[in-house]
Amino acid sequence: MELINKFRKNSVVQHAEKFFPAVAFLGGFSWDSMTIGHKVFGSDLIILSVYYLLALGAIYLLSTRKRVDLSASVESETENEHQFKFRVLDLFCKKDLPFVWINRLTWAVQFCFGNLYSALVICYFKSSGSIASFVIVLILAALLVGNEFLKKKYENFGVNLAFFCLLGTMLFNFLIPHLVHGMGTFWFFISTLLSIGICYLLWMLSSRDKRFLVAPIFISFALIVAYLANWIAPVPLVLKQQIVCKNFDNVSYSCDADNLDFWQRGGFKMTTIHKDDGEEVFFMSSVYAPAELKAPVEFRWYYKDPATKKFKLTDKITSQRMVVQGGRDMGYRSFSKKKNIAPGIYRVETAYKDGAVIGAETFKVLDGIPKRGFVRDSLR
Image 1 (cartoon, rainbow, N blue to C red):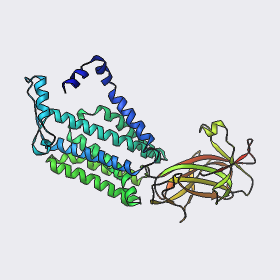
Image 2 (image 1 turned 180 degrees about the horizontal axis):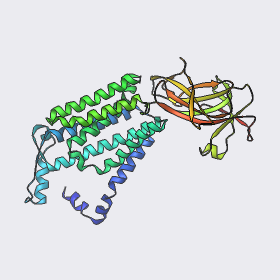
Image 3 (image 1 turned 120 degrees about the vertical axis):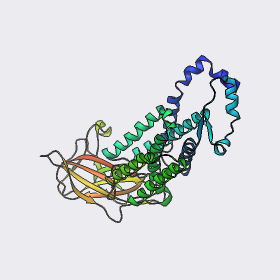
Image 4 (image 1 turned 90 degrees about the vertical axis):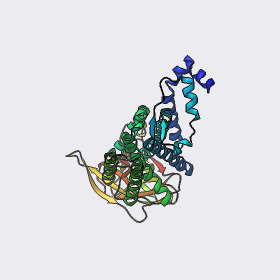
């Protein structure tokens, strides 16, 4: 321990320590982006559950143990020696909690919250297909960044309980579909009740005032309202690919699409599809879901009124065949079509049936033949 203390007193090390939180933040977020952001494995679910349980244990200890102030007159070496004689087991056996353990436990809460925020931002971002659901992602991202500056705040039981309730609901909403192979309103309510129930148990064990339950109850209510308003992304569904085209072949899921230019491929210019009179326009998409999960989807067609410049829902297309069958790496493929479609600007949303949007594409339908010609494209 003395060797570590001498090492930390080095001026270079002290300057480097200032950047450690930022490096740890970027490293953890990058790792999550490369792993859980690509595909969710069973090990990812276990790791997220461990973070949640560790945060639960740390909050429990912070809320149920009294603090003991170490005498300011004790020399630092003696103080360090005293602190390390305090065994981890004593946390569960004694009522008193030295300040050194408060520091360690608040760091544990911050560390676990940060990892949960990082994973949830990625997962919900991958599934968000509307502005409203993206706003929820931005809120999670803001809390992810803010978490780096909230260590001292995590000594407050009310702050811990509020954020723990939010993370619990969003986490269970992601975990439960993987476990039960289903999703929807019922399971979101189960996620919410499970999270608020654990928070209520923490409150009971802490013997705190009822006012500490106000924030978790408000957060739970707000999340339910957001879910019913389709503002929360339909995790764990992820849009993989979408194509607007004509001359569709339902065996190979291939069709003729406009040969897009550089700006269209980059998303800086609207996609187009040219057609002749009487030709049908098809919209295809592939949606990834975990193995064995089944989820009904639908296509919502909107037309932009030239007079009002607003999109108006014209068709909501779904059928028994439009049920995502999880497990295919490139996603479950489905399509919808429009006959006698008039030239103009359209937007098609791929959405969980009667629920949140998974992804959307805005395109322009034109008559004739494109200058760059057509290209045969397909869903992989």
